[in-house]
Length: 382
Image (tube, rainbow, N blue to C red):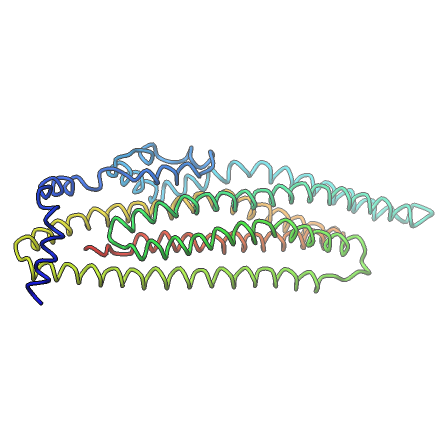
């Protein structure tokens, strides 16, 4: 039996013996070139994010990419990128704050002058017009926020589509063939869910919430607050549950597949080392060198992927947080001025923005976990 196994391994390794020296030289230079799929990942980024990236990140040399990723992971770079994102959107938020505050003041003046009109309906008409003007400003900016969220989901979908072949190549280079298939399957399911469910439901969800909010604000006798809160909670609950299932599936399948790949490769190395002592030891050293190069690439690409997701998330998240703060401030101003209908409208818009923030953060978690697993998953051939 031992002789038969020896003959089998000898026949398998015989074609590789003449090119062993070339393979060792290639292994010494392994990791100097980035995979072509990494460029496709960078191409999926918006232009405003690509402009913030260090020039070395677009290089084919892994050393320059690693230096650029180290620069990106520094506190000063992340803070500078965050401040640049805030600066781009702060002006619009301040203008919106000034416009809504002015409209609230006009609404308060009209409410105070109701007694001067012989007909109370005239005063209510002025107040109604002021509420419609505030609603117009809110709908305009709210639509811009919804567009920003849908645009981020599109960017996240492109990053996921580019991550599938990139992660598959990096996993396969390290001998994690089963892990590559599991990761690709999990990310494909996530991409489909993000496009079919989240991307297509976010606009109708926001439209229904805005309609309920408008009816509650303009007609004090209509109480839809509980129904609206239940609708928003159920939407985020379903979204959280689906993403939790995806996270559990991706983490479990990737981890288990990595262990299976490692066991299979270690068994093959053990058999080769025992049955073919000289050649087996040489192959073991070569494999160990290749494993170190694969781990270097995985760490670089994984950390870079996490940073790219965060940089893509910054503009949308900052925009939503700033507008939510503006609407909360305006709701406080409306409460001080006694504009109850406008206050309810602003409170509900701020609450809706909070749910958009939750949806964006929840959907980002799956791809963040995938990149983290890529960075920490050891090579099966190591």
